Image (cartoon, rainbow, N blue to C red; front, side, top):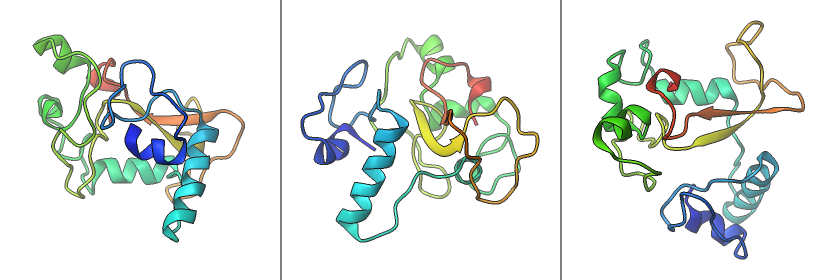
Length: 158
């Protein structure tokens, strides 16, 4: 979601850090704030809105591909789809990118291969051992974020 979209929910919040523009992705919000936004958006639209489970996010990010990424395994293609360390290291393109400025994946979603971390419903865990392949969430106190920020190496991207 963008700062402008989140600003409709929380008009007194001032964007901070590397993403101050209206079309920049929201950064520096807690899991609780992300959940509250989902509740508010559901009330505004009358549609069910929630954070995805990590397995749902992973499925969406891969968009049906059996490869490492939505387009297969060619890591050099990441530059087209997301903002990540390799791109800004090579091209000097530092900082956060406005939402939707990279290519969409096959399912029409943007910014899943980099830019900023994204919250999901699941709890954080050190490994995928014991994880189900369905859409259920792993519930515990520490929450998981998915994706990766623009400042991380491409091997961390999904």
